[in-house]
Image 1: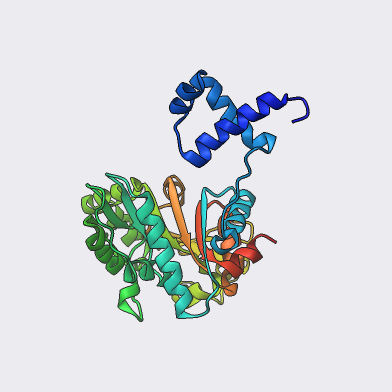
Image 2: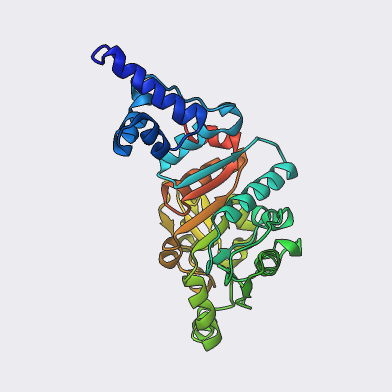
Length: 315
């Protein structure tokens, strides 16, 4: 500022006043002050650097922008959305609402949305807030086979049907269990023309909405699938900290292949990671290790989580 004349400073102040206070366009300012629009643009851009204009964001602490930005930068994420830390079912509800709001904000015509099973993805649909309209020609599909659920509305096929209904989209269903009886049965199934068509829909997903499972939460589903008395079969589980879309990983996000991988019906990892927007919805202290590993491994590039979890992830 000391290297700029008082006359120039006054000119900059006047441009700033017209632009930020009066609300004139740069073209209108140029005509009023008899200067080129390019000069007005340069002045507007310089006013913040010179301290003539100071920008503040009201209630920044209430919207968690700083914490969201820290996470985005630390894990190279595209976006983060944080809800307040509330325990139990209320947290699941808030995470679901936040996921639904985010998904609505990014939907485009022709999108194919892939989902997985789970409490948070189900909550996204349960607490969906309707919009005035939705883009046309969208499809909702499952990214994994179906499984027997204690609560049927957590099932991936049910989530697909309900989300498709909410947004006026088509649904694409696999009609297969997440784990089949044998490798031979899987090989036969994936060669069926119906599955080939269904898999093409999965592979063409533009958006994925997935839960992030902990190692502990998966054992009750997977423990019967391998022989715990055989060292080679149990060794795979030692380093597993989490799972996304039936793909297991260690604390650094590295893939851990289970002995029953040739029986799993789901999108393969390479195709999954090619989905442009992969939204992970998860929170709670018990999931810290799994979420951190999922972020490190690039399993998600958008995170919906709670404040306390987000703070721990920045450490």
